[in-house]
Amino acid sequence: MPADTTIAARLQALSITLPPVAVPAAAYVPFVRTGDLVFLSGHIARKDGKPWVGQLGRDVDTATGAQAARAVAIDLMGTLAAALDSDLERVVRIVKVMSLVNSTPSFTDHHLVTNGCSQLLVEVFGAERGAHARSAFGVAQIPMGACVEIELVAQVR
Image (cartoon, rainbow, N blue to C red):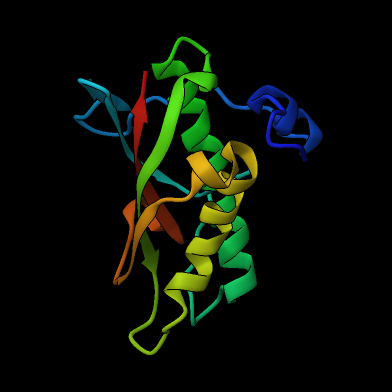
């Protein structure tokens, strides 16, 4: 897709409709803006509106985990859009992604799972604005048994 294509056009070309902001499951807010940064709370993977449950290395394979991380990226973009009055063109750069992967102790492909999120962010925002710093961790469990949880920091105008 040409670099001058709008984010809305990229989302449409990818057949992605951004969801509304999910209601927090505990005592937190979906996002906080301070200065030119927006911090998005962790979003769990969802499939068919329910937590995408499973553990990598036990009952979820790496490719499926990457699909779950891609689904999280779509939810994150929906929340980011809400933080920016539906104008994702205000994103200067995706700064940081932190991914928690519900995994067995022997699972070591957290980075490949997280690529599902990272690659979609670059597709939507372009290499200049979408490439980001990143961490991917294996954890013993995630709320509601979800297989992946991801948070994001974006620089905005």
